Every structure is written in structure tokens, then in C-alpha cells.
Length: 319
View 1: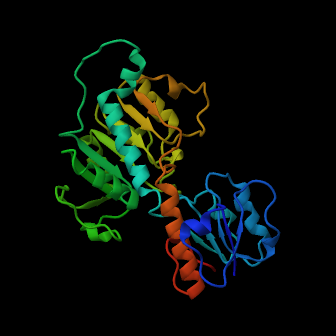
View 2 (view 1 turned 120 degrees about the horizontal axis):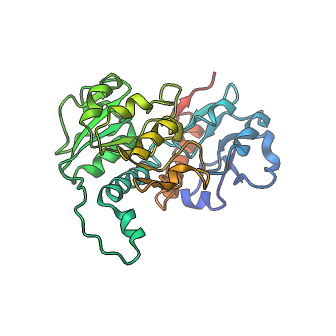
């Protein structure tokens, strides 16, 4: 079986590959390997754009496409019929959750103002995360990872997913955590109108789908209380930028954004100009935690595929 991996040291990082697997390396740059007609499992290069994904249409033997991203909205239309698409669910949870909490703390405690002060000594009182209500919108594996990291901050956490769930065991591998808000466990999306007015901080961790595109519109933002903070670590188009601009320009809301629409955000975009907006350049998952977790997932997928076992993280099965 021929597989393409994106890193020259991938086999070493995985501790080897199952017997019978031949490996070629393709990082998304330059000409692809000559074995393009033979590749059966393709691990798409990370942060290499869509050009490597477009090669799948020229792979007659391809059976499995494995992304190293959790979101697959841009790749999915390029996956040929008969090919199973798997994502990297779980690989980016820790890093993305870390950044979400970092953005919350930096925004509430005024860290950007301190950086801009350049010698000033402003000791005004700032907002704490303690005693605040945090609403996580999109309670999948990333949302649950965010809550685990919030559990020591003495804040109340509420959760929203596509459908209401009665307990934490509704998410694979996530157990209940001491100190979590237990009322109604995970709310359905229909509860947003009632929950938004109670939230001091709203963290977006939803996947990019037709249903979540533009979810955060003028009506959504209008239900957030004055002074609330919106944190987006999901995808830029989940938020309607024009609606967000109105709210932050007035000073009524604050925002911390790891993703934007458009992206990259042009240097002259008005979002850069507001002191109540903190922007990071879509770096939620790109940390030192990424590669070890990614290679553990790929190693397990190779083993499962070689032994005929069900694959992990199947987004679209072959048809």
C-alpha cells in the first residue's frame, strides 16, 4: 500500500509504519511524487493551501484522505467519490482551547492596553474572569477542552450544541468535571436567544457548516449584554463582520478573534483600529502540541487501514 505523508521525519515520529506500507513524502510544495497513480492513503499537508487537495482528482487508487485540520469545509468538495474523508478531530483541541482562554484573559484584564502603554502606568480596575458567565457555542471536542481549562477560574460555564444533550457522556471521551455547571448540561441551539443575554463571554467553537455560516449576525450580537466579549476560535464566516463592526465601533461589545472574514485580514481593515478588538492570525492549532498529536493520529489510521479496521474521525465515508 502506498501512502503520502507530509513530513520527511513522519515515519520516525510515528515509530515506524505497518509492514507492507510504502511511504512517499509530499509537503505540498514542488512537483508531487511520481507515485501519484498508486497512492491509496493521502495525508494532506497542513497549512499548504488547497493546491495539494486538488491533486486528489488525479489519484485513481486513492481510498482515504486524511486532513490535519479539524475543519474540512474547504477540502470536502475536492474529495472524489469513493474516497473516505477523515479529519483531525482531537489533534488541535488542547492548543485551540489554550488560545481561547488566553484571548479571554488578555481581553478582560486589558493586556493589549498594557502593551500599548509604552511607559504609562494605568492602574485602573479591570474585569476578572472569576464570577463571570461564559457561554460556549459549539460544544464538541474543542468546546469541551475549553471548559476543562476554564474549570479552575471560578466562572460559570454554559454550553450550546446543535442538539440538547442530557449529560456530559453525550460526547465521546469526555467525562463530567467537578465544578462544572450542571444545569441542563448541554443546551440545544434553540436556547441561544435565552442564554445570550446572560453571558459575559461568548466563545465560538462551532464547525463551519451551512447552518453555522453567519450564525453570529446582528440579531445574535444584539442579545449579548453591554460590555460582553465575543471570542471566535472557529471560522471567520461564522460571524458577520459588518454586524460585528457596528457593535465594536460603538464600544458596546468587545471581540477577540483568531479567525476573521476576510482572512487574512487586510492591513487597512477597520477591525484593526479598535482598542476593544484583539486579533491573532489564525494560530489556534499551530503550536508545538500539534505534530506529536497529528502523528499519533496518522499512525493509528495507517494501522487501522492496513488491518481493515474502521477508521477514526470519518467525516464522509466512501460512496
